[in-house]
Length: 151
Image 1: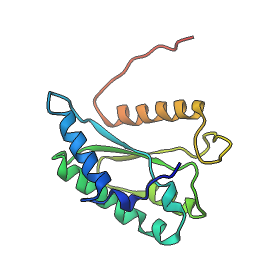
Image 2 (image 1 turned 135 degrees about the vertical axis):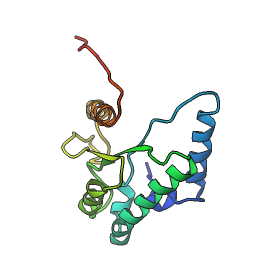
Image 3 (image 1 turned 30 degrees about the horizontal axis):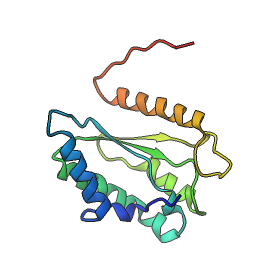
């Protein structure tokens, strides 16, 4: 499966425009956008210039999406990569973990088990990541969630 580079999500691109259009449509009948979960970057690990540009491009993406959705405080939860297509994984991970914009959180996928392709998470790892994302969301908002363990 071929992923996308952060540059492909720049304002005005096909992917960006579709994201904005679908997001606006989702709130037309009373929906609410509470957060954006962003799990992307493996394709930016292939070339050093992509990895070096990641921080600027990601921060610009966050600014643009908040502006275009008219949600200046939109919570953005980014997943720091567990793997990547290239040799600059650590460079992209460092950037993901170091973004310090207001209301941006990062959940680290490092250490979660990968499938045999050494790129994608196993199903159980996806579950664990989902729990971490839920915790990041709940810790960043006033929403509370009570659950009991299902045995």
